[in-house]
Image (cartoon, rainbow, N blue to C red; front, side, top):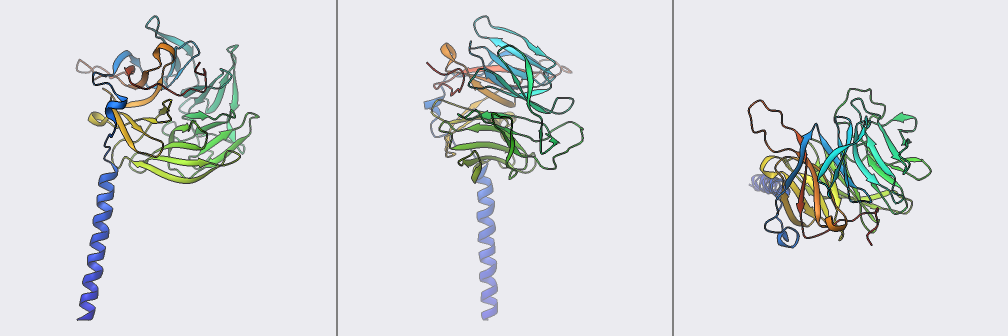
Length: 338
């Protein structure tokens, strides 16, 4: 009698635990905006600017308000808002992905694998390109993907491998830091496949997308300790079985704009630094990255994403650059807001 009752209690507890676990997984993938009207005008709609890319990524803004973005077919493009023209800014880019200007106005770029240079490059204001870092402990990077720069000029970057058959020298996919003197430090390997990355405005936190199809699809936060090391990993959001986060940007208040989702769920997911759900901006194609403009364009979010569906059968779907007018503006370390 006692044994039977104990067994029933154990089974009941197990069922309750399983139910809670399943409910947790189900709710984790549900994004519920709590401040949509505060961020997104009712009439807001992503507008196609250009739709002839192989794979668009890594947008950043120049001191003149132009938008540079990677077309990973091996070129960097430039969009000039004043003229509306899109042109090739650099050919043979080394398979650049993430792009960002540092405080001195130099372009820092993640150059990937699949025939790319597998390095972090830096382009001076004289236009000359050199290597900032290409290896850690003598081992070549997997495929530098995205980057963020803190107030001390230290470059944090993610190093996953999504494609390319080059031999791997680093057996894990980590987050690294390059100091101004060129020293490369591993700051964490506690992620499966790190992708988009941001440094908080106050420099106290690092936000990273852990985007491993079929496994982790998390928005993660780390505390940045003295000396630029990381501690206190927190999962702010779990996309469950949906498409996880690719690239991200910050608005002037430190909120996170993350490109994620596929199909009807494709768009920009807006979180506050603690992971609270704020708003969602749909995109016609699966988004890859985003950045805010400056000046008169300060409230415009530029988005790289798959283009609209082909209009004809057999037509190849191209990648695009979009823009949408929002109610906030972006945070930029360069050029500094006046």
